[in-house]
Length: 175
Image 1 (cartoon, helix red, strand yellow):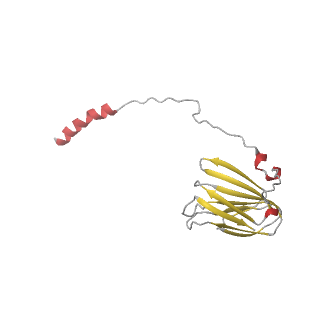
Image 2: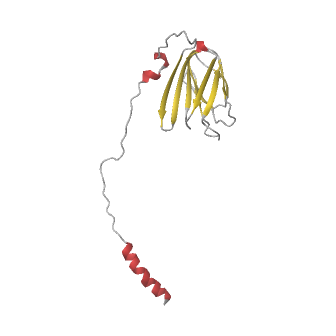
Image 3: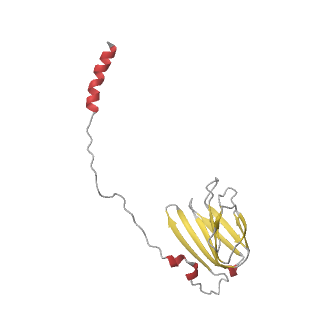
């Protein structure tokens, strides 16, 4: 009796909850893509014209590109201005610093990242050699035998395998 009463009470709910849905198929794409063209020669260090200044003996150019995930800071240096000391600040979670050293002719490069924060999550992510080969990741210290002569890149950013702060001040020393 209780079961039949319960069954009779649920039957109206089954029919009242059934609603037909209308599906409309739109043949137009709902995704809008927007691209900004980037002048490739702006980032090519071979085409960068560096002017002599009386204030600074080092010739440096800095280019910053921003995206939703962070900044990419490019510092272009000449190997003749080595040893280098670069002070920089990361203020977003996915910031990267790329140090491009043109006309690199030495057989070895040494670089160190120093910071006042003990829990700063930062390292040398990759090195791009003059012959186009890339290697990495590394720690905060880098001693590497370089093959070839030409432009060398040091790519610095956070380690995805470690915890810690990703924002703060640091210094990179390159010899």
